[in-house]
Image (tube, protein in one colour):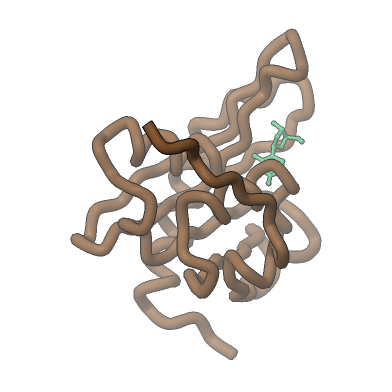
Length: 138
Ligand code: THU
């Protein structure tokens, strides 16, 4: 099924963010974009480091940029991610866990690639039974 135009626009933003990827070690550039309820967009790319464990994925970069700009969990309405893959790129487990903390389970996630048609899923479908932690009362 074709993407809704609003999601196609988000995917285009993710594609543009991918151009900023810092991926000298994997050579695998990823872009992401998240849309807020009030119509703002935050973009992210993967940022790698010679100490490999410090690499940050595009999806988390976008969500962290939004939080750093003052967004709250629940402010997000859709996220798109794109890479140059034979099938629409599938977010890693760490990004799924971060999405599940910051976004509603039914929030659409658009998976894209440069070549083939994109697909649509949701935060809850990507990570059923996500780990949660009750914050202690202060
Ligand atoms: N990467 C992402 O940016 N998002 C994902 O969901 C999967 C992997 C990045 C991390 C690393 O820079 C490169 O892709 C190869 O794993």
